[in-house]
Image 1 (tube, rainbow, N blue to C red):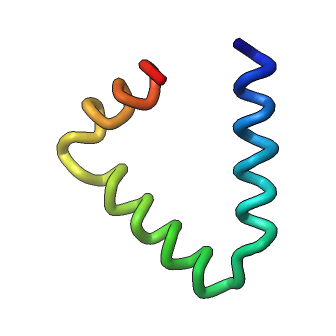
Image 2 (image 1 turned 30 degrees about the vertical axis):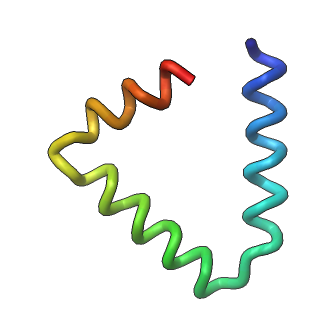
Length: 50
């Protein structure tokens, strides 16, 4: 399982490196909205199941 997480992190870093600043800021803004939502526990549980 640890290897799978490392691969996902490598994919994430690769995606981030290809984004320009405005795309990155938009993505972080959306992520912030999702995490500040009242259903964040449900969201986190869905990520843990994958």
